[in-house]
Image (cartoon, rainbow, N blue to C red; front, side, top):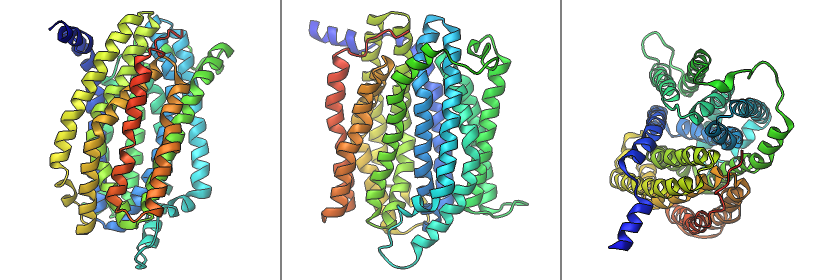
Length: 464
């Protein structure tokens, strides 16, 4: 009984603990749930146009996924300091971390636009393997190119919004980014319907209409967040002097670059690794690309719970570490990891049970629907393991162990996951669902590594 009581005390918090955790997490979960729900509806609407349109858009979204993760890495590099600066009450340090985010995200955006303009067609073509010879891949390429041209216009507002929104969240204010996201995704959903199908006085624009709706929503979300932040300076004290100059003290800049560079590089390499894995799957034909697109859209909808609970770990633990409360940081981390995995088991069970019904919504072939249902089932089985490794990643990141997270995340992806996908897809006769399962199952290796690293307490460090 004593051992059970000890485990309960170590891994299960009291009501006040979960109240604080959920007050931070629920707005982030709801925000991302709405965002992913609209992406789901957007995906369904594009899917009604045909398999080629859906595949072209899906491929471009894979490329933009790499950009999004690069932006996430750029802001995360400074966020590991931002949460600790705020926890310590150092608003000037928090301001310098905000400046760094602005510069880094705009630099990433400029490089991405240059890459898309010069190499966009070639990048889309990497995912198109014509196994049937009916010209479908050429159609998918044309739709993808038209979609990409418009989507590039939404990259700058997305970048600036991330710089502001992450700083706001570091202060514990997750409600405003959630409201901005609500407004944006609501506008996106309505405009998707009007512009994709040409309802009323609006022209029928197909995939281009989907892109225009997304770009408009990006600008709307950024404007809401930026306007609110500047109208509430007392709650956003990092804005004091943020635009009075351009510099970042060499000490702060050096610290962010040393600790943050592995994090920035990690996000880009991990995202590139995931898109490479998708490219490996795509050699099995356009049906696989379409099936993966459907499955990924559904999986993203269910993944938001553990993804946002993991992100909250870095904020809560980072604040404890910044305040020098190291034992409290360890205690909170244990309880949050257990809670995250528990919630994920529930979500995975629901997804597994309901997964076979989702693909039926799409206007595509029975073969693609069956592939999508099988991919969803595999993802549901692996999801609890992903939850634990994700929580471990954010625990290590909160203490500034960015080199460790770099090895844990992107190096693992390129050394284990990508070779597994490439070899299985190119050199075996296994079916694509079996290949997908074995590649996803590599997550179990990360679970073991993550457990050992978190238990070692190497992340329990006050950096500021």
